[in-house]
Length: 398
Ligand SMILES: [Zn+2]
Image (tube, rainbow, N blue to C red):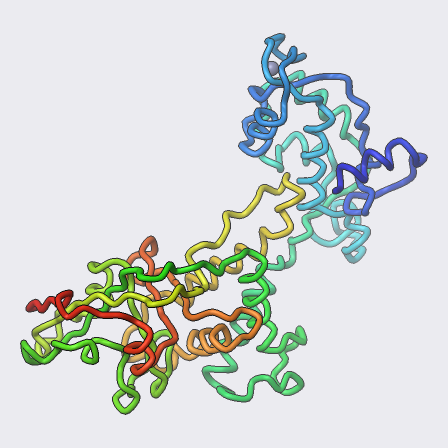
């Protein structure tokens, strides 16, 4: 969109004094190039691949080869997109400070520094190309990092930590009173849950579990033959659901499972618990297709040079940290308190009409590459909505 805007503005508007970070920031730079460039002279992955995929066959002005080339101004537009993502004019955001290098607080620099120190990590390996781009983009503006004093990721992490503090140590059930529980940034605990909901929708994290999928369950037990029916391996009966799980508080029973038998055993069996020397695995299958939130499918963040995707870099960084936090190993002594935030997140996802899902896929705390599944079925629901064959039962000693 920016590039289209640029083209219109370039042709129709007179030059004026525009600072980095302004809406029409391209005006700051000279984009009237005539050169063509191939992908061999810039090592930055995104720009290199952009030239390779968008270029057309022609002659490169920097190596004279007949190869895929692109107009230089298109590379300049990417570089300017990266500059605008990372930097702004300190006059827009910084206090004046006589002691500062350019009269402002914080780290400020000019275009010469930005370019010759390769702050953008472009790794241009052709001197003439390096100098040509400098010639087109150089200007008298000052720059500073937009995130020098805190990024959006920092803000979201603070909000998540604030949420955890409130629900663990202050208010477990009524934290929605935002006037009471907002912090100094006026962030209320609910807002981070809304962020999670919006991210699930935005990044399309809801996936379909096909009907009849194999779902392994496992239970560790005392006597060899005590697990021999579906009801012995289904979700815990409500009268016995007295322990906290990562996703469920005591009293609310859920169906924890995975598609991997080994992982299910690893998650359930405690080999140090000699009072329960046996474990039994079995296979359940969902009778109908299920919609699950897949927290293992967070997108890879886009490049700062990609105007369509760089807007999500901070949110994705937060989500990755958030998922790491809610799936980290927790010892059983701490679990009553430490599982509370994830139990609330799970409940928020479960009953959220905007999501309408049956469960969550999440990375295993034992091995981040493996996936656990929790389905929101209690004992009766798991017996009714999942099929089971007794022949799938297998009992072993620990
Ligand atoms: Zn070339």
